[in-house]
Length: 114
Length: 112
Image (cartoon, rainbow over all chains, first blue to last red; front, side):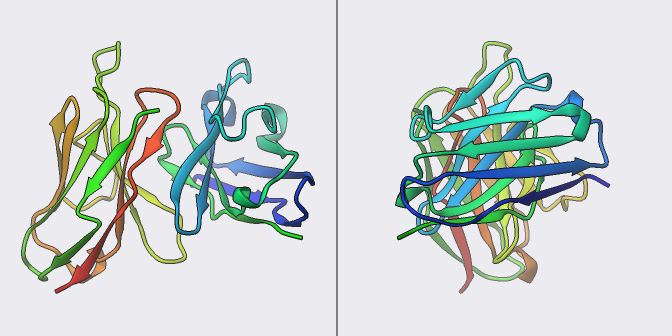
């Protein structure tokens, strides 16, 4: 059974940093692109970043480029999202998902507020 | 960025009757490889989205046959042949042809 479990969310002040993690199981992690998607209250779903199976290619949505960094450790079946210079409009529920989003985790909440 | 526009925002439905949701993209979703990467998702309150269809019309495993997808280029439709109570959720279309991948704003089904 495919499982994706996010962690690392929480409350952070504007300008602060947070690192999200996603631990995968039930499939060969190193064979798949992985994706971070966020759901912002009242604004729907936004794909934040994705990373190639071997980590060699990474893509970001414009609103996070230069502030967020996606990475992975295939030996640990883990995906990461390092978020810095956080803003209030980054508040939301952050999901990791496999490939073309067939499988999703349950999400980890991020709140940016003073 | 490609804008995905769903209509309607809210769809009153009658159980047992058909329903359809439209999704239009601001650019063609035909990829250079010849495929059209348009997916549909269902989301229940408090749950992660669930993919129902990919590449316009391919049902994911476990998705009931009453769900179908059609369309091409910039114009796509999700159809439910006979709406059941468990279908009254939010539906999103999404394109993964062009980066950044983008979602529609969602359509909420509601019991009429």
